[in-house]
Length: 203
Length: 436
Image (cartoon, rainbow over all chains, first blue to last red; front, side):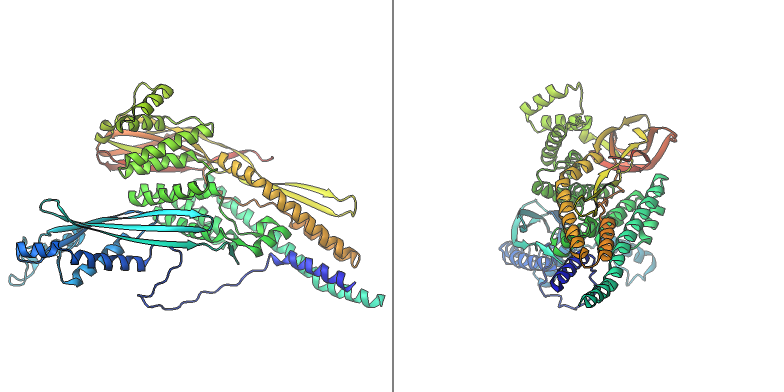
């Protein structure tokens, strides 16, 4: 009889098991900004940083830079143009461009020209200085550094999925194009491959 | 001995009965509250008041298992107010949650086979997941963020690749429009071809806009045989060629017409001949609704374009439910067996407890009638070809008791070769049949 009761209660427990609610709370843990944290398998800060570091190292190691210095006698001036996101993800391209700009500026190997938006803001300020700043501190118009090369590129992805597994293949292509004659003086490529294994079960 | 056993039974019943009552109260009250909230949101939408509908939605904190529907409704109500960025944030949250919910929860499965299907977290159906990408892409198109709209279309294509038995022609056609906005004519043609095939396999009429696009791009890309086949099939006397399209500006308006029919439950109560137990079998079905507008017109200066029906989303919802029905019935049978066994086991020891359990199992047997209810029932589309420049666009709807011009977009700048997309929601509709 006790067995019958216990089996009844077990079945009742099964009935009720479905409405047990899980409590949840938010926890925060500070991480080092350089630490690799892959959560969803999507493009993240680590990918952005690694790609920009590696590609800028490559662009600065290639012979175009020495040839330019030999020919012109000064460091080349570079500007970052559009990097098109052709991938399956809403990638924050601005963050990636910022990473590239930072690497280029800090390398000291090239001079760097401010972007179109930044230039607009600076020109407005310069115009304002012409009217309002003292003549010995106001900066002249028409003294800007013109870029010699533009860095342009794209981020592409190829996905291959089977069941709970997915291979994510990222390909970042960057080209350095001469503004004088449209010559491509450097073409860089970085590939990242990730295997994302989704859990088939959850709580 | 007998007295001691009776004492045990009574003490167990004392603890178990309130528990059973608790289950009934929890499941019934949650169900009633969700249903009331749905009706309130719907009534605001029918009165063309998406702001109040959103306030109502946000005033009820959703249970975790209903969070995905809450996010989808929220995203839709935000886009109805023209808050496209906020809408996309809510859609993104819903997508992330959907990825999590895609994994099986053993706890929820146990609840589904022991209490009812509504105890599981709502996993948006595939057609709903497809529409999430579509609405996000439309939001991005309206924000003129064509690259971001393209990302949504790539994700959509990936989803459709994995779910090859689902085909939503509108999603394919929209893909083509997005690729064209990104000046990728070859990819656009591939999408238009898939849209053409999907309309065919759904036995739906091929929209005139799609016919014109297929003729234009096969001609421009030099696919002469395919072009001749389409020409013979469509029998169109004229269509704009790519050179003309490149010189013109294009305004495309989409009208989201009506509201997705709601799900109801079909209840069958039966009494077992062997043990007199009461059983309830409850399965979901969609009501039937009718829209109140049948035609829309987009005009600017002296030009105008009439709408054509490009999607009937309620058909996709019904098809999805039909495909799901075998699994729903299998879970219902398993549940009835388990509940029956529980009641049987307790009967010998405590007839009172057994009766209480039978009532509990009867009352908790409810069909899962959750769905993304703020979706439109139909989609109408129209395209107006204009000279490049600034235009005042007007949208008029034809139907009973409607004002002439319902929406206008003033001083819209459209460049040469550019397509600008506009949308309008008209949820007004009425139920024509609320039985299966």
